[in-house]
Length: 112
Image (cartoon, rainbow, N blue to C red; front, side, top):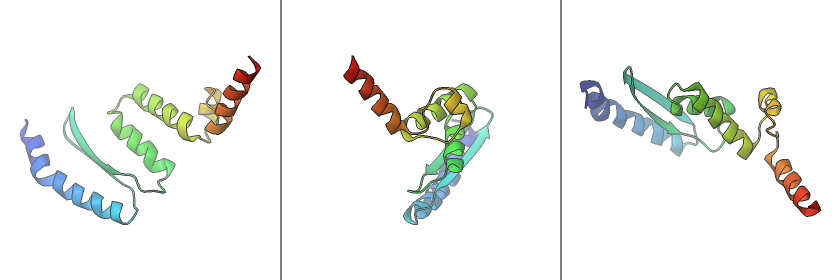
């Protein structure tokens, strides 16, 4: 364990957890990332019940650890499950409304 990681665990993480729990209690979303060395980082996140796409995208970027492929795959996965309003995702064949995709698959299965 590096000195930076040790300091983070002992001093920063408890404060972020306290702030995060307070935000969660009030229904707020909260994200914080701390990079204590080039390849050592940690984050604290609480997504409130009405989180925005902005905070979700930030969360997906943080959890992808700087890997653009991982970020894009995580965005696609979320869009497939919850829907989207992105022209880029539509070009990739991901429907804006995931329920429509389910109905299309069910209809194709009925006709086979």
